[in-house]
Image 1 (cartoon, rainbow, N blue to C red):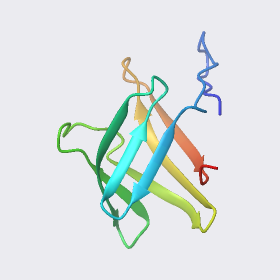
Image 2: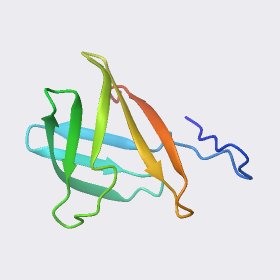
Image 3: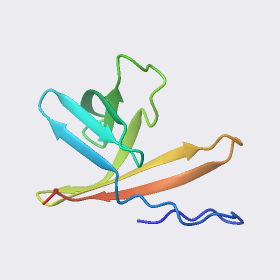
Image 4: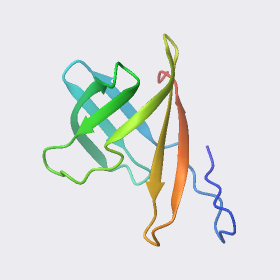
Length: 99
């Protein structure tokens, strides 16, 4: 996927390298620089959000993602991201099984 920021000078961020892996005991998020962060996850608010806890980083963001769609082959989540200028963007990710 590609990131677009209205009025931005660089609208070509590549989200393809991102990986979010879940299992019963936790999750691992791998970012664009191949840096992995692990922690625990849980459903919240009647299974309408996924909440993340990273013991080594209590300020981990996003701390929760709203579940837009969840089925056997797809997880669609939405969250708000704030950049270093204090500007917020709504991010929607469609996650599919690796393969």
